[in-house]
Length: 136
Image (cartoon, rainbow, N blue to C red):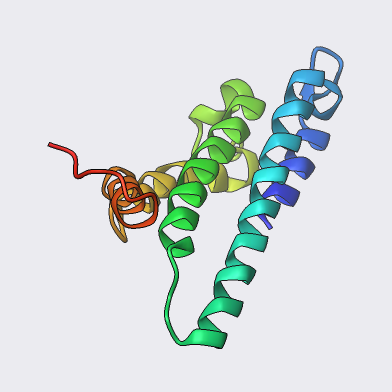
């Protein structure tokens, strides 16, 4: 799980004489992301149970996609913030974890687009789930 890798990164990254995991602001952001990914996990399990029972996909797929792409983008951004100046190095001997977080950050932008942009999925949720009028 990406949150676990983020926690390990925070534990091993030194900042001002201590590791980043000891920074209360970093800890709060990691906990927030962990909570969101747990909520996403249970939403997906609920959607899968509904699909197995009815053979009809529910609206949870659209909501989960929006939720995942936003949370994943924030997670990779936080990883780069934790890396600090080293985040500018995507390869080479001084790159952290051989640039895995840099590639994940770039990939997170693709996740936000593929499968329908978040804006389109929000419109689908608004119209089909919440029965709001079509946007103009």
